Length: 374
Length: 162
Image (tube, rainbow over all chains, first blue to last red; front, side):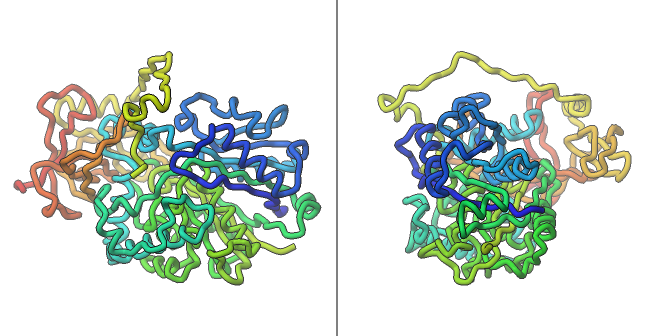
């Protein structure tokens, strides 16, 4: 595959209640990404967004975002998934050779919608929805129970990894302010109320309003724009079954397949990866995804968090903006590769992975292999 | 926690709300397999389907096996007994209209009916939190008023009492 370069990006720092309209927020991110890359709107030929009609309270919600997203009179489309999926869609556009520069953005404003309720609308309306037992809390709780039981992992270990995520968020200048908890301890995590046992309130991310934009370019173009691009050298995406009761919750089969494909495309092995920015809802899910991506032995993934090579930004715990979280993971991995991650920089990062997901307990995963250098 | 749904009453004065012009009550065609399933619950019986290729049994039923991509149109009668695969205890009740933390915990189980290869979420009744254990044997509790609806299954309870 021709290498695709990430040449510019901008993340609006998420807030619990952002004092911007959706369109001001999107404009800030997209304008910011153009400025970051030193480009003009006219240079962009295609704009791909990741938003969700239910989150936006509108149908075909991208049609009102055209001017804010820089798509006026341009090729434009959207995915109703995570921003990381929009980036793949943009890659296809570029690899088809019909487009030179692609703008990707992911946006949502959870302060304006009942996020946990809208997730119920993901469920099978003929059985799971009317029963009203399956939701983000109950599924994350069961996932954690299954994982802990199978590998003999303790609640304390998960709480320790969770506390590290909160502490990492404190070093991330783009984390939600309320998620920056430099003094968080496992004991405090374990004192918080149960959302759905063994999952506790402090194990679940805070939601933040925000938008993240990313500009992708084909190899030749990327080298004209910047001396220091980050390359997407591999991508993989896999969809597991919807039926929750048939899934092995102790692992992520979709992450296994997706990472296998991405590593093959990039010609790398899991052991080559220096840092991983993965989109898990909880620290437990981060760990499961990392193990499934081959970074650690099954049941031993919490060591990656302790070592600092899994979600040094704090991951979704640093503030979860639905539809933008996967793009945030990509940007964080890009920063690590460029040595721009400041306080949460991991030293000597040559190869990184970043992932996005959709569905309950990451039914679908998409993963990128990213590499720096010319 | 800020992850709660909006409290529109509290926000009154700060925002204006639009209730919308369309009263959107959707209908969903359950399909032939689920139609049969709800015929079954009306008679207080479980009816699943079996994959024509791998032989996996699905409950609730569906007409295809995603793995084999083969038809699963053979109906099979299944008993009212089951195994608890996983569980969680939660004070949260989340529907498509509201998310509310209640005063009482619900015991939510992932339950695999004997003879089925799939499992579904249901409430575990007539027992206490500390008695729940993966692998425990359960039996179905039918609702008092049966109406061919998912809530015909009131839940499952331990075999032989709590």
